[in-house]
Structures are given as structure tokens and as C-alpha cells.
Length: 231
Image 1: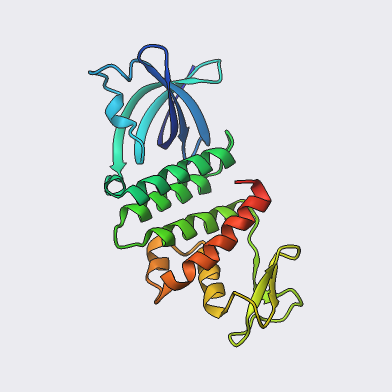
Image 2: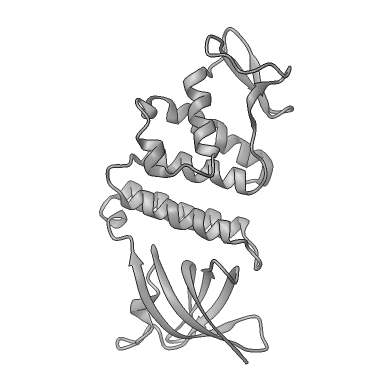
């Protein structure tokens, strides 16, 4: 048997037998793991307080011969408690967990852990608008999955111009000039930043009038995700 110690975020938990739970954990260095937390539903369980949802925990896991490992110990490192004080932030946080669980496999790269952790951190900062965090998560997810659209040139190869309006061409995954287009330069700039690995939810929220353009760009990003990976 092999023991590992790692950080994790609980993606899902399912009650099992009388007092156990099966947990799906996302880790930065071991991908996605399924573990059993024995006796965790008992009132005096030492494991329960260290594996809360919407948190980052430090866990010790014993890997056996089967596909489900055993949780040996747990310690809560970060709890994003501000999220649960707002219903919209709570619902979006659970949506992030569900989406991340759906697109990741056992060997998930560290980028997925960082994406989810930064998204929960963004939701935990009340000064950052909820739609901005939603846009950041979905844009970075799109990029991490390898489906980023072209935000530098239009479908003919011309540099995107500030004075033009555009529609989005899904076939070429780029913008196409159109006088009646719903996308203008501020939409594209916001999308470009949201896709950037150097951005963060807080940085995105600091853009002047960003909330005016979020809904338009978010609809596009979610449409691209739906077409690419069906989520």
C-alpha cells in the first residue's frame, strides 16, 4: 500500500453504508482521486471537519489495490466561507465543482486545480461581481481544454479594429466583420483578458465598466464550451 499527502478540493461526496462517504477529490499533483472516508458521518469523526465543500484541505490517503483509496487524515487549510453567505455565489460555486468534475479525469493536470481554486477564491471576494467570476472560470476552462477562439485577427486574417463591429464565426472560431455585429472592441478586449493565463477574477473585475460587457461575452464562451465539450 502507498500513502500520499496532498492538497485537495472536494468535487463531490456520496453517502455510503451507515457512516461512510465516497469523496471525489481534485489534487494539484495526483489528478482526480476517489477515496472512502470511513465513519465520517459519525458525530465525533475526526475526518469530517477537514473535508468541507468549497475549501482547500490537506489530506493523507492510503492507496490500496482497488480503485478507491482510503482517507486517513484531513486538515482544513482554506475555507471559502463568504461564498455561502450569498445564494448566487453558492449556486455558481457548486456549478464550478460539477463542471470541473465532468471535464477532468484521473490524471488531470495541475491547471484544473489552480483554475477551480482561483475561481472559488474569486467568488469569496465579495467585491468581485459574480458574473465576472463566471466569465473568468468559463474562459479559462475553455483555454485549458484547448478551445480558445482567435481574439487577434478576424476570419480573413485582418487585425481586429476598434472602429468595427463583429459577429462570431463558429466554423473558423474567430470574429467576422459585420456592421450589425453584436461584438465591439470592448467585448473582445474583455474576452482576450479573460482567456489570458496572467489574469484573475479580481483583475477582470477591476476593468472599467466590465459588467456592461460580461453578459455578451459570457454567452459566447458558454456557447463555445457547449459546442466543444458539451457542458
